[in-house]
Amino acid sequence: HCISSAASDVYKRQVLDRGIRKRDAYDFIGALAEFDRLASYCPTYAEGFNQRAYINFLRENYDAALIDLDIALKLQPFHVAAQSGRALTLMKLGRIPEARAQLLIAVQNNPWLSEAALLAKGAPLGPVGEDI
Image (cartoon, rainbow, N blue to C red; front, side):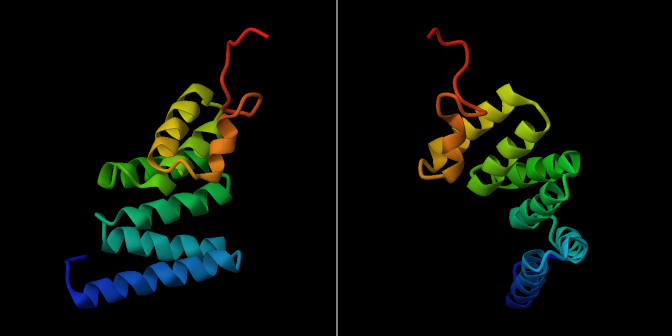
């Protein structure tokens, strides 16, 4: 399993890179297999769970994505990509107040996130209950 050594870091990076290449080639099943391998090999590596969540998000398996995003954030609470990914996943699940709260946290950690536009007035996660 994943121990901190040069060999394990190289293997971890190779699996991550293979998964990303497969994702970029729209081989989501192949990418998912690589990220499954990475999560099993290194269960304390937040990026492995974040990447697997992204594949599940792209495959519209939002429940599975949310599970992996929660794991990634438990491992690395300030993982901005996992924070914004979790907000987008919650939005897709129709859990708008939770999505808004999560995206506000992500934007607080990185104000330049493109997803911040979703918080604008009139946007899907924008303010609610304002008088005109």
